[in-house]
Length: 48
Image (cartoon, rainbow, N blue to C red; front, side):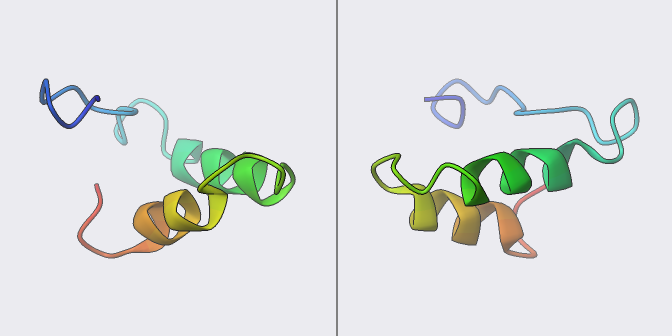
C-alpha cells in the first residue's frame, strides 16, 4: 500500500537504523502471514 502511494516506510537520513529494526521485528514475529516475503523485500538492495 505504501508503494502504491509512493510513501516511504522510513526516512533513512532521520532513522538510519530503522530498516534493521523493522527486519528484526518481523524476524521475531514469524506468525505473521507473508513475513518471509517482507523480510526478503526489506533485505533486498533495491529497497530503500
